[in-house]
Amino acid sequence: MEVKQEPPKTVDRRVQRTQNLLLEALVALIQTTAYDEITVQDIIDRANVGRSTFYSHFLDKDQLLLSGLEKVRVSFEEQHRKLAIGNSLEDKREKVSLAFFTHVETYHQLYKAVLGKRSNPLVTQKLYLYLSGLFRQHLNDPQVEELKVEMPLELAVQFLTGSLLSVVTWWLENNLPYSAEQMNRWFHQLAVLPLISTANPKLWNSGRA
Image (cartoon, rainbow, N blue to C red; front, side, top):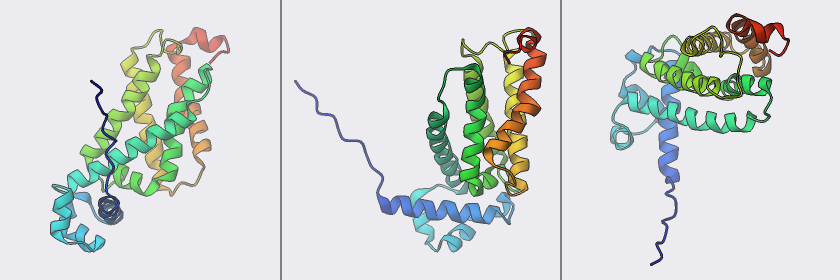
């Protein structure tokens, strides 16, 4: 008996448009108001939609912001795949951070809302956990040998994640004065290469780092 596969579900464009309006309203409000002080009424006034419309899509403003973070994650993974080309050690080392800097450059308003001083710490923590997972996956790659000696893997993961988010936050707070490519080069000079020299001096001294 042949089983017919159902076509993939598509989101109604009107639903997408309304959800985008609400998210854009929240992001705009976070630029000037602390997240904890923003109300659902503020959001719907800014988006020019009714309260019932808001609650037909989201339980509260937290779920709305998390939906924005999920959109960031999906879009970032697409960016990551595009940039993850090449099999050299250098390619593998740089693909995570370069993809992130490039994505932040494109969606800087949303990232300002997630990483700024007025953001929700729980959402920021979710982004931290997501990036640390990417670094952990990358450093567990059998072909990435630079941190296999003299340092716990998790220490390197936490250092790289915290450093990357700190650098990106500074970049956003200063209105992106440098390109994503330049920021990625500096991040590697400041954080990645010194980490390699500490974790694996033999690899560093061989000139292969």
